[in-house]
Image 1 (cartoon, rainbow, N blue to C red):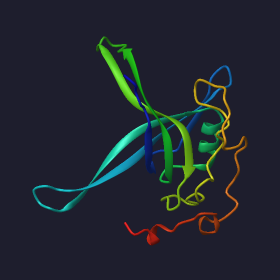
Image 2 (cartoon, rainbow, N blue to C red):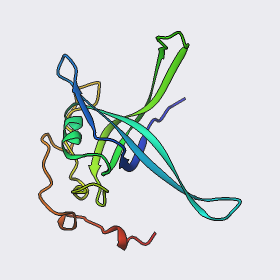
Image 3 (cartoon, helix red, strand yellow):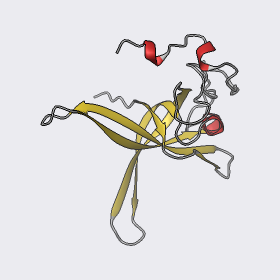
Image 4 (cartoon, rainbow, N blue to C red):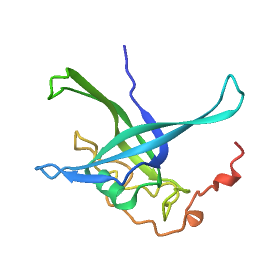
Length: 165
């Protein structure tokens, strides 16, 4: 039976991205994303919001670019896949596990809470290197570019206030 593992998230960073490098030079960027779900409470009929906190890891040049342009409170759009790490607890607590997202692509999102909320669509980082597996190019280019336009000047910009839903 075929499988499909794809995650698309948009939310606010819960902390500044943390960038580290392996001994081999591979960049590893880790950060948290808060994603809200809005729903109507079945009993009271009132609208409520519930936050889900997701840990995300982006490898390679994409991770370096993400760390360069994002900070706590800003919005981000991330595409990736789910991964499950399992290990034995050092203190004899048995098996432990953690579900997280490995980001493959990201884009700037207008309207972040932090200063400089990012650029419009297509302003994301360097997508020329595939994630942990390495190799393979992409249609997105090979060098990160700083946003040179304000979000409203970016090609294809749509103001969220103009959205009918």
